[in-house]
Length: 87
Image 1 (tube, one colour):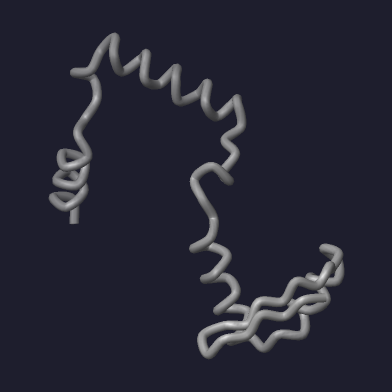
Image 2 (cartoon, one colour):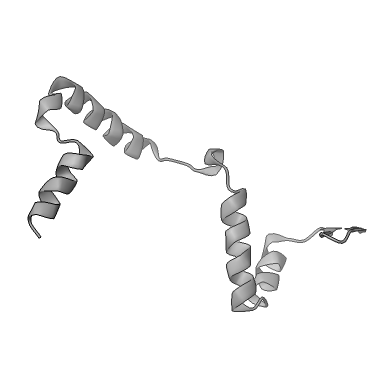
């Protein structure tokens, strides 16, 4: 076990299983859990996201459909305007 301490942070290199980490998280206060969620969301990279092949195929098909007939689609601003006029 090694511990590195500074005034800003503490780095612990302790081998823990995933289940042990889960147990530690369960002991956190709600506020600490929110802070942890923010850290995890911040640390997540775009490479961590996995898009299923089925979803990719749906997007590809929609792009092809749009490219064949772009005039049949509305710009987002047009959709917003139509929605606003209905209010």
